[in-house]
Image (cartoon, rainbow, N blue to C red):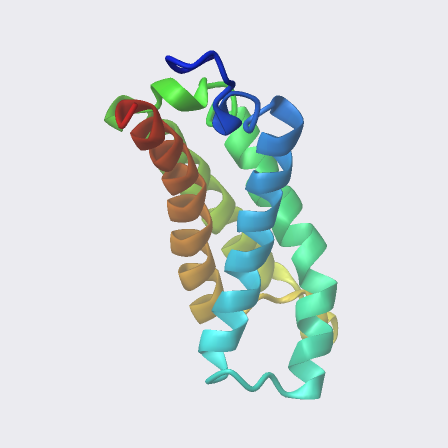
Length: 145
């Protein structure tokens, strides 16, 4: 893509598939960490910090898989609209329910794997809101040209 002067827009190559993968992963990771920080008023006790480190790969993997299975990663970012919101809501609901089911189903000795319900709620909202927000931001950047 070029402007009137023939120079490339910096964003024409910005959102390659690889970068989109990294941005999605970063948003999911960041949402989980922010959820823990909010849960503990920005001071995570050492025991819970250990739990966060144990849980984060699992939670991000579940959310990323749900986003893929719901079709949220197949949309071309610059064409994202409200019609695509359904896939994100399905992915959010599915991952939330799976993580809650594991929390309720795991025995007490697996405490490190049990994501607190408040963290799960905040994380789901932040993660999928952020992932959809990335796409909307990309769409908005296209509209301003």
